[in-house]
Amino acid sequence: MEFVTTEGYISNSKIVHCDNGCFYKIKCTRTNSKSLQCIQIDCSATGLIVENLLYEKRTHTIHGPDMNYLALVNLKQNILRRCVEECTPLRVIYEEGTSRTQGLEDRLEYTSLLRTMERTRAAAQSKIPELLMDEQEDSSWVLLTLDQQLFLYLHPWKSISASNILTGYEIGLSNTLANVFPGVRLQKCWFHMAQIRFPQKMSQY
Image 1 (cartoon, rainbow, N blue to C red):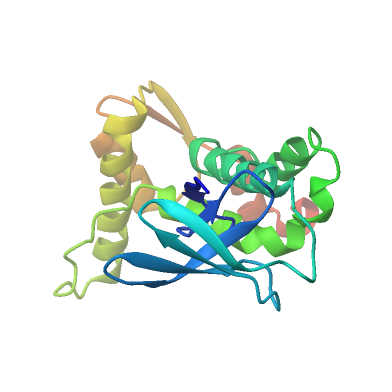
Image 2 (spheres, one colour):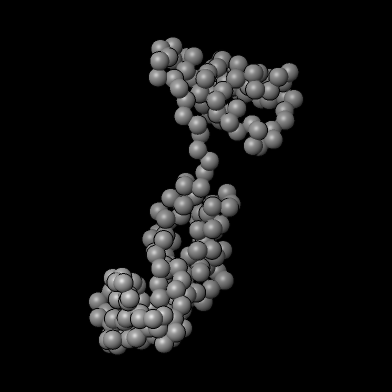
């Protein structure tokens, strides 16, 4: 039978199928052939690929054809793609993705997919350049450098342009903002000042 190779449910995996609801993973690759194993756990069905044709050696005995498997794979891929491209909360991405399916949410539970979504989003984030601060002993200078490196890294990519910035009273952060945004007006936050001057009254807010 002619077959198709496509991405599987597990990340970076490949599956083989003949559009008949039966799916195999490649178990062993030889010079002129590939041995196949059913993707379903405990199923003994096997196949063999020879000269670009798939031959089923053992039939599926413990389950029938799974005609929704490819839709399940596509659903997971779309959810993970949105995790990379968007800042939408993960729960919202999952609920919006599964709301347009019929019964697939029962096979793709949020709790089981959450870690994969988190890892996918984390891997897609831009990495902050390593800071060469090993030889610095002044912790306040190190904190200032860390803030400044972070702002300098984000500034050209985010096209930030500011004339007024509201901040707290951290000296290192204020100096960093003044260096990164020349001429900016730094306005201190009254709420933070009140927290320092009137801690008992402000604890009510």
